Amino acid sequence: MKAVVKYILAVALVAALGLVVYFKVFVPKHTFAIIHPYSGQLNVTVQGIGNVNALNVYSITAQTGGKILQILTDEGRRVKKGDLLIVIDGVDLSQQLGAAKADHTKAQYEVKALQGELRNQEAQKTLLLVTFKRYKKLIKQGFVTQAEYDKTLADWQGIQAAITATESRIESSQAAVLSASKRVDALQEKIDRLRVYSPTDGYVITREAEVSQYVLPSSLILKIVDPASLWVEVKIDERIGAQVKTSQEARIILRSQPDRPYRGVVKRIDAMTDPVTLERTVNVVFENLPKPFFINEQARVIIAVRKYDDVVKIPLAAVVQRNGKTGVWVVENRRAHFSVLKTIAANDSEMAIAKGDLNTSIILPNKHKKELSEGMRIYQ
Image (tube, rainbow, N blue to C red; front, top):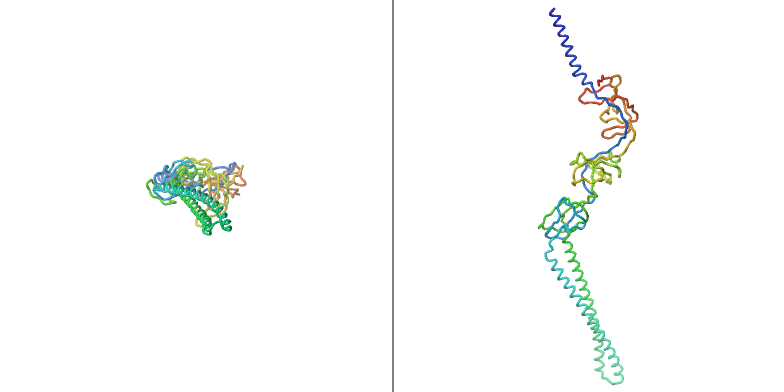
């Protein structure tokens, strides 16, 4: 009798353990979430990672060498077109300009004096010519001596030579006036270059020099970005880059603002592919500028390359590959069966299929559950 009781207890224990394994292990491992196809719009997208940049970035450089006296702005500040940004020490340029202007004025006075002298000589020439002609007649009549005639001839020839010399001096003085004028202009331009103004409305993004620092011509001091030209330079794999076209809508997700996507538009696509990474650069402009914005900030860009209206869709998480075919696991009579799909398109979360019954029960695979196989029992 005791043996029978022990046997019954053993059987009961095994059965209890079996039930525990069945309900605690077998059933949970075979229990899957079930979903159904649904209809709607599918937006096919292409994604890429890039950095915030701008089409118009202005390098503000020293137009002449010297010591920086003032920098009237700083990084992160807004400037307007025409604002004075930088003042550089001109040392003695102002004194040189004053001396050059004095030389220019002196040369002008010399020209005026010589022109007056020329007018006087022209009057003398007229008088001497009359005298010479009279003496020429008188010598033929014997009323004047040869010496007197020769003197009038010499006086007339002398005034002609003097006029020629004065005209040459006038030309030389006029050249001196022109040279002095050009020197004045050159010095004035140098002085003007000591003050650097903003070429556009924008934001200062870089400051490369400080007050009292000596700089050479063309040394970079500031960089200004035109906010209206702000965009994201995003890298797209060339295998999918052909789908991207200008004017396509996009979403821009800044790393500093992951929960606030910005609307954008594809503005430009570079004509060359990077030979190393096999990526091409796509420039996406902001429709509304982020505030604040940071040049070189990382951003993720999602570009809508195509739109499908009123299609049957399923979550991409339900799609599997089996024996080289794309499909889903469906439930029929509580058993799993693989169903091949005829796909239309897909994005990063959904897939549109050519034919689909909205009542079809689709198994959502779960890596923590038992691997699905044909005919496997399914619990819900």
